[in-house]
Amino acid sequence: PDGPARLPRGRQKRIWEYRQNMSRVRRMLAVWAAKLIGAACRMSGKQGVTLAGKVALKICPDILDKLAAQVRGGIFVVCGTNGKATTNNLLCSALEYEGEKVVCNHTGSNMLNGVVSAFVLAADLKGDLDADYACIEVDEASTVRVFPHFKPDFMILTNLFRDQLDRYGEIDSTMKLLKKAMGMAGDMTVVVNADDSLSTFLAMDSGNPYVTYGIGQQVFEEDKDSREIREGQFCKRCGEKMKYRFYHYSQLGDYYCPGCGFRRPALDFDARDVKAGGTLSFKVEGRRIQANYRGFYNIYNILAAYAGARTAGLALKNFNKALKDYNPQNGRNEVFHIGKTAVTLNLAKNPAGFNQNISAVMEDPTPKDLIVLINDNDQDGTDVSWLWDVDFDRFKDIHAASITVSGIRCQDMRLRLKYVDIPSELEPDVEKAIRRKLSDGVGNLYVLVNYTGLYSTHNILKRIEGESA
Image (cartoon, rainbow, N blue to C red; front, side, top):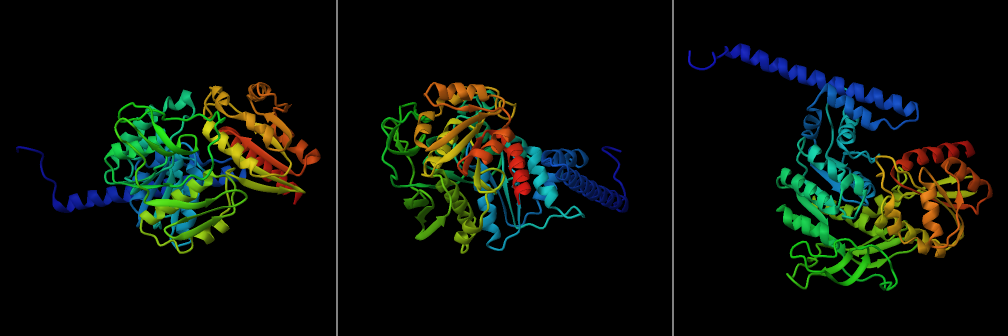
């Protein structure tokens, strides 16, 4: 006969049921395997999240598609150079304090395998997911690999800075990838930091609906002697040099193009009456938001989480309580109490982030010891020339009793400090450096590390903290 012979209806039904059952079996096996790998890695002191996701995908290639489809409310993705992990975890906490069930990649594993792990490790042993929302941090370069598996409802775009040039290339390359991913996501709403001209242009150019947040008033007087690197100095629309009414830091501020009129748009979520120092607070939508954190950049992280949740329609009646109870994780301003010493661990992986870390440390007027760890593994970017774009001169004003350089590229860091006449101690082994300062330091220790040093240093501090308990 013309065309394929048609199977009897009963047989078609049996084949369909067989395929559905096999799909469920594969999904269950993938979940079991991922949970076993995760447990084994935790017992051996390793993270193991990406491995769990990799194995789950091998067993069931469409597992992310299936599990993401079970999220009832909406899926948030958080992208941007700096602040992704903190914003994502704050958003997750805010949603949970509203009584929602949330899937989240808390560990910061933000490539495809890490995203898969977040879903499979949250699933039950039957391969099903019970979740109202998902809060997923996604590496910018990985968006085009993640978005084919699900279409997010919201993207929070924090900022775009130069980062790991040998991995990402120039910012234009990152923007092209993000624009492609936005096109794949359909009607996804972009919640964008409008104080960043690059992020704003991308949101506008993408064709997606967008909502803006930012800090509408000048908070600090501009330092005329600042050597801070400012990205996006030229208008992405017409190429004219941008002008600013004021800066907050790096290229973030109130900008406009004298050529084509491109400017910071009106802010849907405008942080007003901002106060920074030992604690942070601001007003938005008539509410006073308060957090016991340091670092002006955290205003943006808190505001981004607030704007994202409000855009999704949540009332956020318990937002301040969520901030009060929030415990920074995985080295993002995480504090360890070891004997009589308070140890603050934070990530500093590019010029903009490092400059803001320096500002945060300067907000603490008490004497302190400082350890800086620089690695050049593949995930860090093997090019460490970015160290010369950090304003390390300001280390002279942080009341440091000592500065120790550590990590694979400790000699590069020591040389960088020597060029601004700042003496430093050399100790490649970060655990030895930490133990030395716990023994003879001033009782206030800051440890700044780039990417691959974060998890290992976190584990070292947890172990030492346990020893002293």
